[in-house]
Amino acid sequence: FKIIPVLCLLCAVCASCATPRGAPGALDDMPPSQRPDVSSDEAGLWMYMDRIESRLKTSGGVVSDPELNAYVRQIVCRLDAVHCPAIRIYLVDTPHFNASMAPNGCMQVWTGLMVRAENEAQLAYVLGHEMAHYLRRHSLQQWRTVRNTSSALAFFSLATAAAGVGFAGDLAQLVAVGAIFAYSRDQEREADEIGFETMAKAGYDPVQASKIWGDLLAEEEAGGKANESIFFATHPTTRERIAALRDLADKTAKTRDSWTRGREEYLNALQPFKRKWLREEVQKGNYKGSMVLLNRLLKDQDHDADVHFFLGELYRLRGEKDDCEKACSEYRKALELGNAPPEINRSLGVVCLRMGKEEKARESFEEYLKANPDASDRQIIESYIN
Image (tube, rainbow, N blue to C red; front, side, top):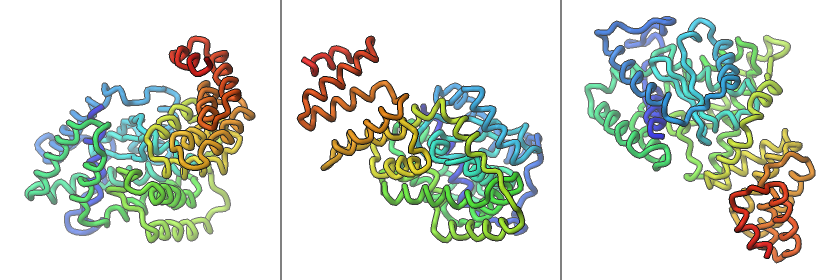
């Protein structure tokens, strides 16, 4: 679906604005439930995003599940009850890490972010960060900065180009967009601080703000260019930034005795979608980055058959030395835990066949067909058995 890259450009717009709060050109915070005057440049920016939002609604790439949407809205409203009614939340089904907040109140939360967040507090921090851009009207400040320059033309030409390539196109183009607008990180620092303060006031564990950045940075470093995050293109996570958030957490934690982590609630809300999202993660083809993610999930979810299975899938697909043995080990752990994905015996059969274990491969393929009598690939599997 073609609209996702265009909405991502709003992160790029926000990232480059160089007007700190209180400096010349700074704006009042966004008033709740109030649209700008129709004659203003801000209204024009809102109308532009209104059109994009209307296309997003019918893109086919939005998770429509009412319970999951209600759960995420509950977090947003906990962070800011005043502005919550004016914010429209769209859960975008894509395995990449990103969240964004358009100036008209359109919020995107990508499923790749949700599967990486370990608890409600981590998601709350990222959402609070994006809401800070919205509340401080950073997009409008940036637009006023670039509209009379060549950068303004570049923004709209790249937005048009990105809309044409679709989400399946080259994500490197969006990284280039981020570079064009990367003039200053002042407002990123401001959004970091506001997001941290917002989540802490809402009762979330402040340590989680730096932790999600640290985990994502490890994934980025392992995956290299192939794992380059759109969010990172305009929200560069550095060790200094992580250290700053840790310092804030150290100071804040001394003022409170306990913090609401929301871990069990978060995992329960995501459970119906986790298998699908992990499958999409594996299908990205970035084995190193995805392995960092899955191994991290296993530290807290070693009892989860899905995580073991998809780690096995990564080994099977990568096909390096000893990967067949590693894949078999993960598949067997998943089978022992029970409730593994239905294709697990098919994958195990393929790996055993590669290893020359024909009898074990035949047994696995037969188990697969027994559990999936109407499998669309039945004839292919039967040819392997025969």
